[in-house]
Image (tube, rainbow, N blue to C red; front, side, top):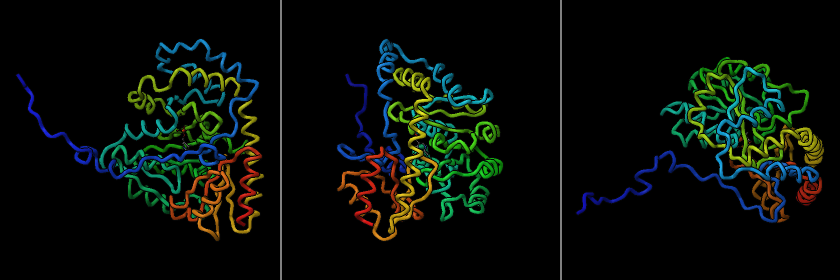
Length: 367
Ligand SMILES: *Cc1c(COP(=O)(O)O)cnc(C)c1O
């Protein structure tokens, strides 16, 4: 006896929302055998003399048990390592990408707007589209600074539910000043998320927003271990008022931070002084590389407060420069088609001294 009526099943086209069908998959190129300067990874892994201790820390990890759903040890280590004020709550994410998803899932209503100065990190747009929100990019000025008038007009017109500001910004390497961040936050009718993925590369002269702007009631600050030599761990954290984070906590999947990540993070943060030393070296190499790139006659380099540099090719198309580097075994990111302001631009992650030299040699042959 058959109780069920057979029907024709839906095709993806019938069921998948149009906004998602219109999206493209976030593409990651294969970097096998290449000098990898495309993804802002640190060229350094766990320091050699710490590897045995790190493996020891993982040795008796109970893989048969779920991880601590709260990640309490990780949060405590983050508080200590980064001097997070007691009045800010912490939400852990599987990378900051997941935190962007949680924030936007929580506020998504059709017609609501996500706004960001552009060019910037592509995930804001990607995730806004995925959750059915409207994304609005406000062009930066031609030196990649915030365009105050255009930003105010866009805020007035669109009343954005969320504004994302990456500082230092990807792919420009530029910071928004604290004064600008505060002014935008006070002008914003919704949330302002300050994405500080590159906070560690800003240098000591630039103070932490945690003690100032993060105290405003509609501001959240997001950071990640990814650019600090730990991209493989996938750990990001969001800091802000408990009133906001307790709402977001409701939709965080209970075990989003796996047990190996929790243990490795606690270990890495316990040795944060060593990571800081690597970061200091990367900043030095970045500044050296900037000056070397800026000497190249047919290129303009932009100063950066992150672990990468933006390079504009003034004569040859960026596509040709990208291919030439690739044929020299060097993978960078071709961002020239991402935004009109990025015409001719490549984004280059700072590598080891040898990798940076190989890059300069290849570019010299083009200059
Ligand atoms: C790389 C990057 C991130 C991604 O961080 P994950 O923690 O690896 O997800 C977030 N924001 C900006 C601006 C980035 O450049």
